[in-house]
Length: 119
Image 1 (cartoon, helix red, strand yellow):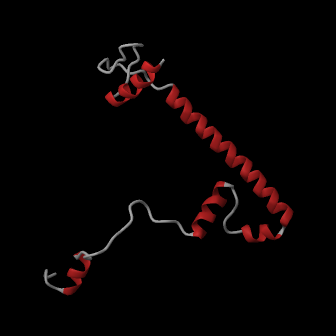
Image 2 (cartoon, one colour):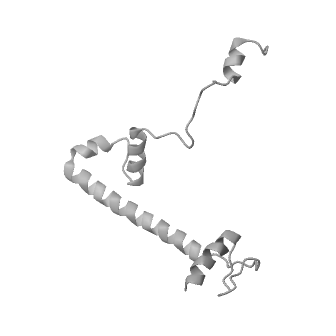
Image 3 (cartoon, one colour):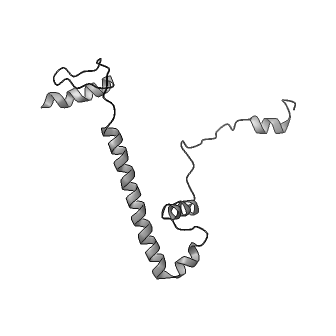
């Protein structure tokens, strides 16, 4: 296609004053509801019929909330264990003079020294 044709200019052109927010686009309310129902193990296609039966709907929400909270806590515990059981730093370049703690970066050593010198 010729470089001066209008379709090409429109496709490849830049808008002069266009601004776009950083990050991903905001989710619609409908998408948020579907995501939450999926995390609660509620079928997104048949939830309306289930919601008409109030007692069963409330039971589904309670069990879904309990399962979601349990999975969330397990995930947090696994992350915490991963951080606590991280391999020790072997790089002796950033070592505290007072207590001998090894830090991964200079900024970490700087922060540690501020705390270490207070005690």
